[in-house]
Length: 245
Ligand SMILES: [Zn+2]
Image 1 (cartoon, rainbow, N blue to C red):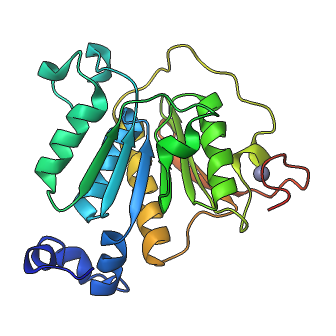
Image 2 (cartoon, rainbow, N blue to C red):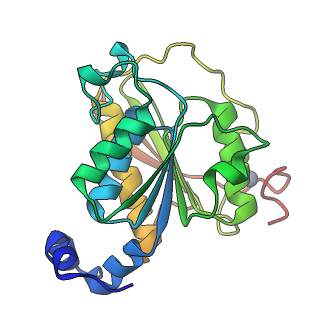
């Protein structure tokens, strides 16, 4: 698919970036990305992916908007309380960029439906708030050879890595045991905004082939001390998900 005059103008400031060009922009236009969870992380990553011109976005979330979401889920407004997040997100993102096809999927991801709900996409971006679903998505992505950009946030702390099936470790290699879930995650806007922006950098790089994604590396941000560290992560040879990939 080629780019229209409108699109060339809309994306002009990124098309002139080193290594991006119209070719990179066409790659984005011909790509589909799934954002699983459109809360603190996902409402921001989906906005940035739509603005950048990823051709198709699949937004997956089963929740309705609550008042306590609004301190960080900045895609939504006070008048949206009680509505399904994916429906509002679809409306807002279409208004931001009508060139992007948005599919709103109002479903909870389970082991049984994950392949149908996420479907055939080029990348999956983690906006989840629980490890059970995150591992389900990790397993599906590894099995289907789809890159998966993980991020997790709590308080001033965030972590991010890109699972590139067959090239690096998956989340089960790094977390052999499911981390304990907090019932109510303490969080404010700054942390998910920062991490979601990094996730979109990773996604754009994977889709266009620019740069060096966080494969086999996990980046940790401590916003309280304002330190950023990257640690090498390795594949577990006995990983139940990816050791045979
Ligand atoms: Zn693994």
